[in-house]
Length: 167
Image (cartoon, rainbow, N blue to C red; front, side, top):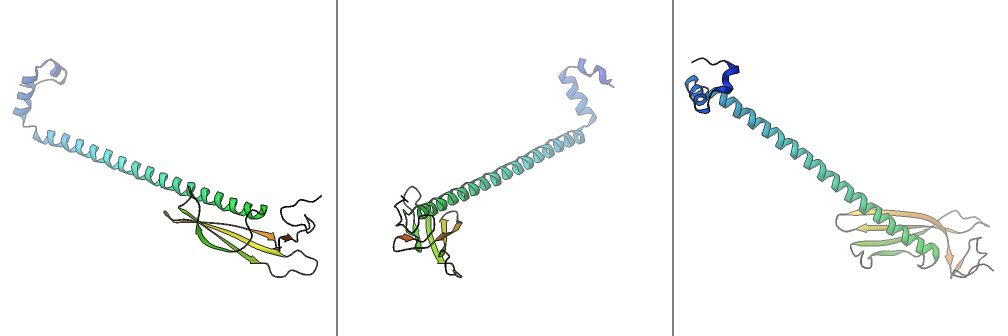
């Protein structure tokens, strides 16, 4: 029984299976199965690539967030030193107060060499902030006028004690 492709729709399902079994169509069925498995493998591998890219993106975002937070904490400590709230002295690494208990801060103060007569004594202040897990280090530094005995030698305040403004 030879069927024309256009008349295939008119044949009932049982006759179709008889036709397939009579023609020994196992190689065709195996090829279809192989094609389906290949498509499934391609889909799974594409999904794995997308998931790994998303994971890498989220990890990068977390590192950027922690880096920005570390710079903000270091800038806040440097601002406290500039305002006179915190003394400009070297401090060893110590844990920060909650809610930043995962961070440590360290202040490094070094005098600047080469101050000639008539110039303001300067010191380099560096704030180092570290995150414990994941490990992250952020550094912020600035050159500030030296402060001795509570009196700044900067010309902006005329040698007045820190904390008191100019009249």
